[in-house]
Amino acid sequence: MADVFPEGFLWGGATAANQCEGGYLEGGKGLSVPDVMTAGSVSEPRHVTDGVLPGRNYPSHEAVDMYHHYLDDIALFAEMGFKCYRTSINWARIFPHGDEAEPNREGIEFYRRVFSACKAAGIEPLVTLSHYELPLGLARDYGGWANRELIDLFCHYATTVMRAYKGLVRYWLTFNEINCLLMGAFGNIMGGGILPPGQDVAMDLSSGCDWDVPQRRFDALHHQFLASAKTVRAAHEIDPENKVGCMIAAQVVYPYSCDPDDVLLAQRMERTANFYCGDVQVRGSYPAWAESVWSQQHVHVDVSDEDAWTLEAGTVDFYSFSYYMSSTASCDPKVATSGNVFSAARNPHLEQSDWGWAIDPKGLTYYLEEVYDRYRIPLFVVENGLGAVDEVEPDGSIHDTYRIDYLRSHVEAMAAAIADGVDLMGYTPWGCIDLVSASTGEMRKRYGFIHVDKDNDGKGTLARSRKDSFFWYKKLIESNGSEL
Ligand code: BGP
Image (cartoon, rainbow, N blue to C red; front, side, top):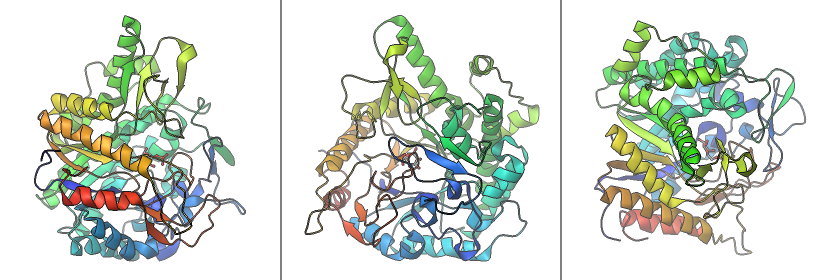
């Protein structure tokens, strides 16, 4: 492929603290919402329990133990030639309950070591401040993000770490997949830290959430918009070199048929899912159609003059997103099924992963071009990949050609968008090292270039090994995307 990727393109990989770190009570860390979420599977939902219950499997507690393996893992990232490593800071490692005045020094020093190791290896850290990991104290005692007090608590946390890592980190993301708050169970728990009532409640993604109160989610989202906008301003004051992005779960929705009702439905779904959040964070105000979204949901969002000013003054420097799949919209209820974030109809033209996610590289080109046309700021693909079951051969090798094929076609899709004028900063495929799945809590749903010896029951040596995709990605980076 011709040289299309710009000089300095940020090739790398992405993880999140609660899915890879482990060490859940080490170094003074407090409990975080994922620490009370059990493991599930493709057919069994994860459960949220009232505290840590004996005899249950909580995958975040050890995860893949990066807390103790980070030096070796960063060395493997460097061997692949990573220019960038996206990870997140676990807020409860810095402020164990979430609302202390002074940070936990051990937590600060842990991430300083991680980011320094990245820098020493020539890898630029890209840090998510909130990746599905609200301190449990804030979820339990404040009601999560539905409570406006979280804005100041978050800003205190964000500015503390930005000051601590000044000169080490300059790329930041405020909220991971902020738009997940537009949907039921997953949005409440993972996005908003709004816990279900009860001792032991299933986070069922395939059906509705009977304890959902839409007003709470829309309030939570508004509070996160404000917290994000204030953080952007503070980041620029702390260090003018800082660049802060939003992070949206990309939803590409095609009309299932050319019935104008399907076309309009697809437009509405796509617009709400992507641009409700994108417009606030990039343009600095709610879209014109926000009122109709609110009235359909029977909610009211109170945007005071001061709020409006805050949103306008804190727009992001770049737009980042995760992209895994596309979906379709149909007015026929008989064709509806489910995807990773929003409910949709199965596309008969596309293959699906073992977890039912439609594989659609062209959807990535489509999305990059749509979003760039709308916002005209740099874009960054900070998650993409194929969750699959890998077989380890007797000699220890792993021939994950399906993963290479998936990633290759998505790199081609990015190249097509760049050739069309899209300003793309980088690409950090998800789960560059095997880690815990967010939606199902499994280990067997693997994304990594690096295999970790650990199974769904938590057994294994935690040994790391290189898959075939490791060598493929290394060559790709070496050639700056031209050797596919
Ligand atoms: C995104 C999340 C990640 C990640 C990924 C893959 O929604 O930002 O945290 O986990 O999806 O999803 P899963 O882990 O459910 O396969």
